[in-house]
Image (cartoon, rainbow, N blue to C red; front, side, top):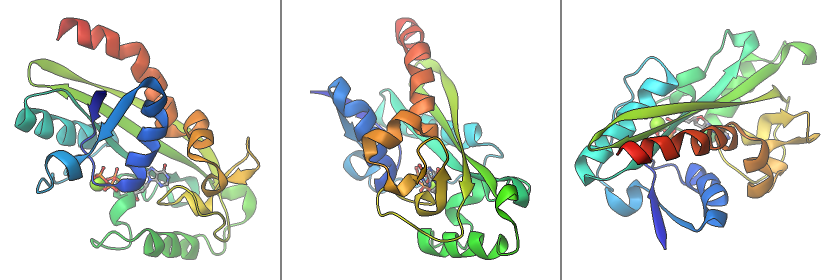
Length: 200
Ligand SMILES: O=c1nc[nH]c2c1ncn2[C@H]1C[C@H](O)[C@@H](COP(=O)(O)OP(=O)(O)OP(=O)(O)O)O1
Ligand SMILES: [Mg+2]
């Protein structure tokens, strides 16, 4: 089976990637499979910079092509926060639950029409011999007032997707992949990747 290596420790992300790459005949491997001890500090100022940091570090170490994903939630009423700090918004111990509680508290007095937000996903592909590439996908939505749904991960239980009339956490992995920031980034990657592989 063809293998694809994602420089992530996030199991929810890995599931999303499995839903996207599995049907194409790929087995998805993560840091848990190939470099459990690896921990790249996300010191970039953009999603792209952080995705590049994660992808290039692992490509260098494994001497092969790898993919990384840096993603997050931009809430308009919070001037784009939590943004690149989405994972560590409520503290360095990285709790999805605590992050959601913090966001809902900050939006407590914000009316429905001002609760617009988007998920952003930057994907970087790096190899030992090539200039890395990045793509970005987004997904527009509205931050709900309470959690609903148990699929997905992260902020999915409070991210209402108008086109689906459901929370992101109520979608199956396949449904999410068809409309999500991650799915949209992968669609762009499928256009760009053949060129990258040709010159590799
Ligand atoms: O589809 C999504 N559905 C819900 N929440 C999401 C999604 N995509 C990103 N998010 C949130 C989760 C986390 O709070 C942050 C990602 O942070 P990010 O640094 O990219 O990932 P991470 O630290 O969990 O794993 P890793 O860096 O090992 O890939 O944005
Ligand atoms: Mg991270």
